[in-house]
Image 1 (tube, rainbow, N blue to C red):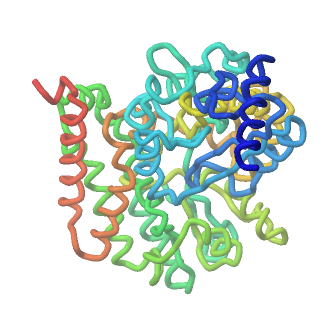
Image 2 (image 1 turned 180 degrees about the horizontal axis):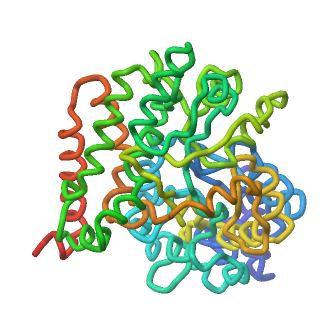
Length: 444
């Protein structure tokens, strides 16, 4: 009986081969190869989408758009989200091992794109896609390499401010500070009233670093051609005394209790509750972050919240970051064509509008066809201030050590390090990273 069954199966294989239907029976066909970059429409496709927490809006709008895409195309998106502090290293490991997701999110800027995702080796070129022409030209350098576009991005330029509680300020007779001395005096009065002056989300690692490098516009004002000189290794960061000053001021704020007693356990996610319930008076965020507070606390009147420029080091300029996180397609994945269709879907005008409307913390998109959400008051304030590029977007080997600098500041807060040691460590890392990259200006 067994011999008859084997003979029958062998006959069946021969018959199928004769009919051009080589399926199974130990045979391989190019149409079913595991190396195929696209999948037959008859097969159900799931695209894996890897990201860090900050890479996707907390509102879930991208996941909602993905469900709509699935209903229209049958292609499912499987989101795989990792902690912010782990993602950069994890993504590199996944790319190098050939285990990267079909789509992955990464922080993008002109200086660090190659070291983060090595686009020519790992990322699908999307230069010829229709939507590329509709992007703000200012963001293209952040997602391009060697004249080719490799990613898609959505947030408009980033500008961080202190979001503050006007009601608390008015009650205490306080005015918006315009220099560090005024800032310090304001915080002391707020602390004396029983309210935490500044909520700092130290647990996230990246947030406490913002005062150092978002004030890059001020550094440039005081030191002409600074970014160029730093990038050519003609000067180092110790030639910017304002940077050392700000590190010392951060330490002073911690020692004076202006962040509260348990600030080392604070997370950015809990800042909304602290501000909405009046437990804290200020928090560094983008202007539209107030909408996130409203989304979580519908009864809170966001008109109580205003914005002002971070006055660390007497800064009075707005730091502008043209870069943001971007999405990239794994060119070595099995579903490149489906991933490109998802990008096409996200770039449709109606879906761009859905994204802006569905992401409370976003003020604008880098798609000129979609109108920004800045209020008249905010726009007038922003227009009245001087602006300049943030340091991490203009100086090499700054952004790549961002999370490490966050740990350096924590060590300083706990007394394990000094402000001078923090700056020296940042400088040492720049040198190490430049040498690892074989940067000619560091290897003369």
